[in-house]
Image (cartoon, rainbow, N blue to C red; front, top):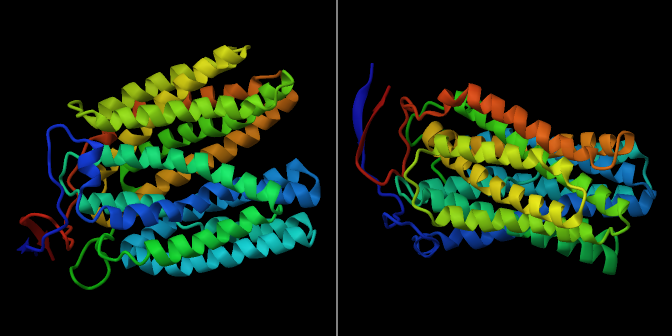
Length: 432
């Protein structure tokens, strides 16, 4: 039997506008208190994989061992991230971040010491598991904070675009910094710096911003029905679509490296992948500046169809200019699909499970990327040069078929009996 109560506590506000923009978004009250620490705290994640590869390759002399160790880290992160998000929704981001960054720092330093001691591969794997499992999920946590700060605001799509561009910038700066440290200081410098930045950025700066973190669903202030985000049908559809996006990242990383090596110009790998990343960033900026009138699920279908078509053409490219053009096109198709997927979470998932939902999507990209790297590498070794580009085609086409078949599950539904502190308007909700 329920009773009707009224939530009266105001939330941080954002000025609404029919044409939301980045300037307006960045003027949102309280935004900078978590944006700057959040950028610093997610930078180490972009350094982790390349730092492991460079260190382990230096100590073992094997790219295979280095790639396998990095893959173990990535898979562990993908599998454990959603549980970290669920705990953050239930007990608060700070309560999860502080012990998490301590564990990650210790695990990362242990992996570094084992590599330098020329430990056997199984020992590196054993250290790689907790290193990946404890990666702080700062990106999803920042997205969850935007959901609180911009409650019912048309700026949510702009915020999703801003986060996508921030992610891309992170993955441009992070690998460059890690590579510079490993090659000019010492091979262990990248992983040691990653551990230190995680501790300071995630454990001290970002976790200290308590005012903007989402309400805790298990803190006794209100009785809230907590449901795992994975039980929401639309989230499972989005996970499948994001796995396909991960296949693009992983497949292109391997295949571009193999292509440039085959033509005797390995230095072009960075140029081609940079072109791909530039397309992603450019379309993300544009997407966030548009006041969309079409429903997000329709935009996702259109955007993903374009992505699958563009990715399906990659394997036909046999020249640098054509591959650069196709890479730019594929990159331009990725950002809108990522942004729209993250935007749909706001309408599909109750507020008390959104951090978990974001981590499922982030983990799906990482898992798809890890699988694609492995498969694309095998195809390049066993078949013809450029066969690895079949992986992005297969991944996006399969994901598109899943999206088309299950598109009805992306329609917004009532979230049931929930009441959380920090709602920015007087709303009637029913609790037991």
